[in-house]
Image (cartoon, rainbow, N blue to C red; front, side):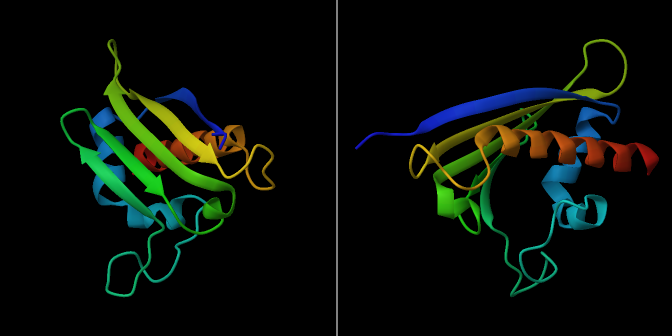
Length: 138
């Protein structure tokens, strides 16, 4: 059986500090639907019993990295696996940080009908910028 896997990645410069951005993703992700018009909660308020999140995640505080394994919803119709890896680093000079976005995937088949890996990456870049704007304003 042929595998249809790969990886797409990008870096996004942010004005918020690396710590701010990482802590938002680490501890306040339930606020994302209020920040981005592109995100909807799966079910519930993301905090209480009965809430549904459509991913598992692994946290690496030392490297300010979180790996999300998406396994449900629209993604599962076209992908056997999809991992979103977000790592935030401080800029070497000046304030702000850099968000490294990496998406590792394995498609169900070569030609999929849903979102392409590149469009998923572009979506991640857009949401990253929306989070940054929110963090800088608040």
